[in-house]
Image (cartoon, rainbow, N blue to C red):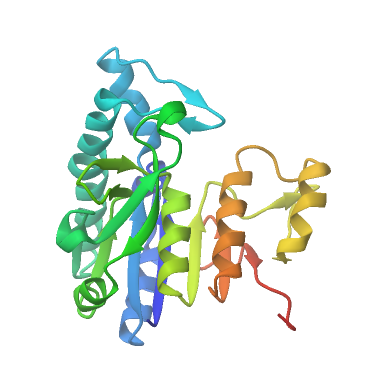
Length: 247
């Protein structure tokens, strides 16, 4: 599938500029399929605090009991997704909101139910259905999955984007973040290969916040995604992760 996937964090939705929408428009005009996968972590934390629902993280993963899962679905499907769809409509881009239950788009499995509750990873995508949906419009997909027996799973948005890109062999994956790329001594590392990661982690260039993004990115390029870009804007090159030329 000639597909470009863009992951957008919950905070980033309100900060998207005209260049972002113009890039989407150019991709669509060039015949590329575009899928946006949106997060909502800050909004979930805020609502949890307002409702006095404890937030607990283990190894950077939000432990998701049934109450937290309900809040997560409420925020993703009732807040952040409509906000992003509204922005797209205001920019004249045809778009559709999607979730795992639409034609069983995303199936998944528990990461570690005993440790994290209803936290999952994506194991399957209904490629035929998604391809048809994306023919005429931009897809806006929430990072939730369904088990084979219909249980909802909360999936980290970076992981979800990388998993979908990997399973569909997307041509490009963009992980939008609040920094212009992976920074070393205040400067963006323009290009990386997977073998660079261990040393960069050891040197504390890549810290806890960036590690999950890069781990997801590595899995994607190993599975055939041509390039993963970590950046704060689609029009900025940021950090590009690729396999070595001879791989």
